[in-house]
Image (tube, rainbow, N blue to C red; front, top):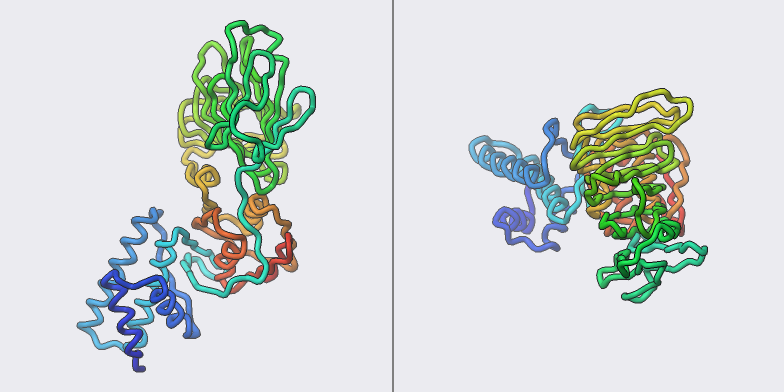
Length: 394
């Protein structure tokens, strides 16, 4: 088969690093004009994006060098190059996805340009509601920066970066100040950050909340969380920090950890980044003793209250939401779509059974159509956006 002259030029420009985004798109489309348009890459090793990109580049250039010595059909040689070029383009634009096909034991990395969907949903953003002790509510994302309210001797302020902070307003602090409990909650499609009066920083994921006293007094610092939150707890050895989340309680002195306690997830997961935490199951029927987590470990409490521990947890996966990504490690489709539906505030409807697992990452900044375009690249699952509904079919 004769390779078109313009394609040869595009390949040369890509190899030289001078190809534009439009030229990469044309090269990609040329590759996908053939029938068997998938390429398999061995990913038994766990590689970072940078390592993966380097590995693919080495494969490209070694293939080109080898093909110069061996007579191979130009059709096969340049198709392999174009496939790798398409993969590198996906990495360069910030998203890559390994799709574990149910009919194969190998991972496939697939990327493709498709036409934009006629309907779309924008990604979530900084949205939250502050509920004060008297039940009144303040919509934080539309509130002006500066002082929001005074509660006892505590000021509540919104900073220029959008986060809310609780500041002690005077030296006369009384036990009565601890009676002022506030709640910050995010809707589906929302996230928010708050700094509590003791200096503890809290990031809330979509459809989550934290209930806390405006001032911590007594022997313990107690908060309640629903949904998912990442906390950087201010150190205070004299006053342990306790997080109640569903059927679990996490006790710390000062540490960084993530709690995932959504009601529709099979387990409450606590992932530790720094320090030491004690995780207790609060289910009455459970007689298990508490577990202590070391950095890099993750506990899980299932619906029956039983605790399990993963000693080498995927910390990056647990914290991907806070860093603006979806990240999956052989996650089944329904687990993935629960995360996506919360962030985009959409409802997922399944019509038929789809048995797929995915490994990789996607940005949370794309419109929902872009996310589903990438997930549909297996050819074994299809998505249709209908307003706030996503129809999933095999």
